[in-house]
Length: 107
Image (tube, rainbow, N blue to C red):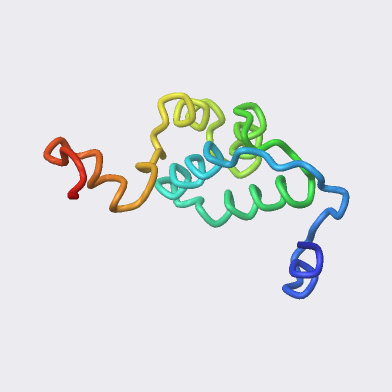
């Protein structure tokens, strides 16, 4: 990872040894898009995760990132709580399989 980041000229903390669930962070970025702040938030999330080794799966971390990028922390927290930025999990086949008319597999 470090080699790839260096090759691309991106900052990276080589001491980073944890992975965190980024689903809420992705939802925050999607919500920030509706506020015209997608680029700022995604850059801040990148830095928080790869450089500052912050747990971007925690609501308080995400609220602070939102606030630091001129987004209202209370709205960001609200977006996280009611999952406004949530996208359906899985791809097209997952959604098709969830439809009621699918009753089984062919033999």
